[in-house]
Length: 412
Ligand code: SAJ
Image (spheres, protein in one colour):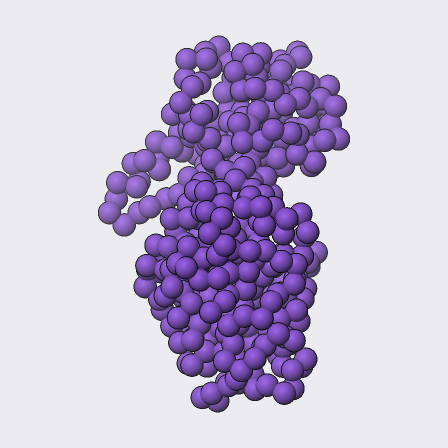
C-alpha cells in the first residue's frame, strides 16, 4: 500500500511521518519545490519538537519520499491551508487544487481524506470537484450505501509544540460522506493513532473541528476581557484567576496580548459566515481577541509617555510560547503598533526562537533585534509578550527598577 499526503506543512508532514513510521510507503506532495527538496533530504523546513529526527529517520529508511505531483496511491490525504478571504469566508482554492490534482490518479477503491480545517459542506464539495473531472467513477452520495471512491473528513487536532505526541495520542473524528467512507478512512488512522477513532458524517466532523477552536477562542476572550476589567479596577487578574480556578467547575484560561496562529483566529469566522445572524458570541469573542494587541500597545505607549526618552524592550515575537512560528502573531502586531506610535523611541526586541527580524517589522528604523539580556539591561520598560521558557527562568532579579508589563503572567 502507498499513501500520498498533499501539503507538507505543520499538519501534513507530521501525518506523513507518523504513517511512514508504521512501515507504510508515504509520498509527501507539495507545490513548493524548496519544501519537496528539503523533505527529500530528510529535512524539516520549520521547528517542531521530535519532528526532525522522525523525518530524517523515515527518509533514510526509504519509507518517506517527496514529490511535486501526487503519485498513484491507495489513499490521498489533503492537508493544505484554508485561509480566509477579506470578507472572512474560507478560501478553498488550495483544497480545490489538491482535489483536482488527485482526480486523474484515482482508481476504484481509493480513499480521499480531507484533513484541512474547512467550513461545513467542504468534504461534499471536494467529492463534487473530483466527480466533475471523473465521470467514469462513482463518487459517494448521501443516501447511497456504496461508491468507487471513499471520501471523508478527518480534522487534525494537534497542538503545535506537541504535534508528535498528539498526532499519536489524540482521539480522531472521522466523518464520511457515507458510512462506508467513514469506515474506510478510519482504517488509515488505525495505522498510527492510539486514541479512539470516532465515526460520524462529514458535516458533523467539519463542524466539530470549528467548534473546538471557537470554544477556545471564546474562553481566551473571556480571560482577555477579565484582564482589562481587573486592570481598570486595580485588581491583579492572575490572582483572581488562580483563586476562581480553585472552584471545581471553573477553569479560566490565561489572558495574553491576543490570539495568534493560523487556526484559532480563523476557524471561528467559518462558523460566523455559515450563520452570521446566530453566531453572536463567537463573533464578539473574535473581536475582543483581535482588539487585544491594540489595548496592550496603548498601555505600553501610556507607560512610555511618563519618560523623556525611554528605551523599551519587547520580549517574544512568536504567536505563542516555545514555538518558532510568527504567523498571525499578536506579539508582532503589538510591537508594530508601539513602533508606529513611538517613532522616536528605541525599541529592542528579543526572541530566542527568531533569528532575523520578521518581514512584518522590517520597515521600522526604531526597532532592533537584541539578545534578551542586553535588551532587558538597557530598557526602562520591559514588555513580556510571549512566555518562552528561557524568559520565565532568567529575569526575576534583573527587572528591579524597571517598568514591567507582563502580558502573560510569566513573572508572577
Ligand atoms: N492563548 C492565550 N491564552 C491561553 C491559551 C492560548 O492567549 O490561555 C493564545 C496563544 O498564545 C496563541 C493562541 O491563543 O496566540 C492560540 O494558541 P493555542 O495554544 O490555544 O492553540 P494553537 O493555535 O496552537 O492550536 C489550536 C489547538 N486547538 C485547541 O486547543 C482547541 C489545536 O489542538 C488545534 O489542532 C489547532 O489549533 C489547529 O490546527 O486548529
